[in-house]
Image (cartoon, rainbow, N blue to C red):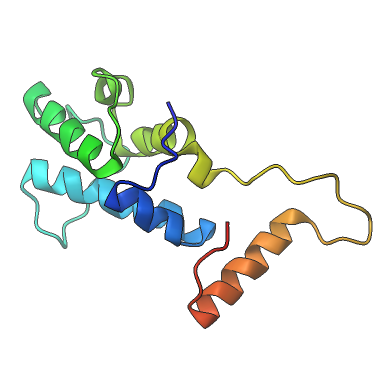
Length: 139
């Protein structure tokens, strides 16, 4: 399942950001949901590589977190998603590839001629100029 709609505030916010800033923004949103579940203060770090059970999260807490993530994403997630992706880092990988893939993968570029700069360089230049001049990513 891939979310392509910008109907949810999070997806719209991610879409407006340059590609290079999207992973950090998604991480912040996911961490906020886990902080809420774990009753952590905003300044406390959420361990990215510790399993949810090691963090003391119950199945009820995980389901509540999943429901809040679904509301943020504007899409439903498979019920066992947090059990099959048992750390924040693994969950983020899943979200960026399977759920929000269109926002995180670079579009296919036509075969570049020798005189054209590489697409990765173009993306970086666009991101830097957009950030410098406060313009949203045109993609």
